[in-house]
Length: 139
Image (cartoon, rainbow, N blue to C red):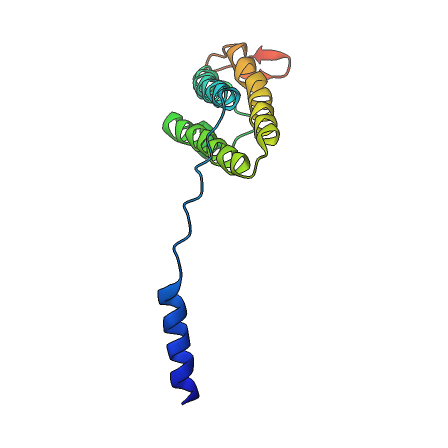
C-alpha cells in the first residue's frame, strides 16, 4: 500500500509541476565582439605567418609539428581557440562577469599577436642552410 501511495505521490507531483520560465540568453556587448574579432584576426595572421615561416625554412618553436606543419590543421586549431573563447565569454556573461570575459579575450590577443608578427620577420633560409639564433648559416 505504501508503494502505491508513493507512486501516486510521485505521479501527482510531476503532473502538477509548472514548467520553469526560460532563462534569458546572454548577449555579448560590443567590446567583447570587437575583442573576439581581433582574436580571430590575430589567429588568422598567426596561421598565415606560421605557414610562411615554415615554408621559408624556419621551425616552429611553440606548437607541436603535427599542428604547425599542416596549414589546415593550424587553421582548425585557431578556429577552435576562437570558438572556445566565444563559449567562455558567453558563460561569463551569463554569470555577469563581463570584465573577466574581456580580460580573458584581451590576454589571448596580446599573447598571440607578438608570435604572429615575429614569424613574419624571420629570415628566409634556403634548403642547404640551417637557421640558428645568429641567422642562416651553411652546414
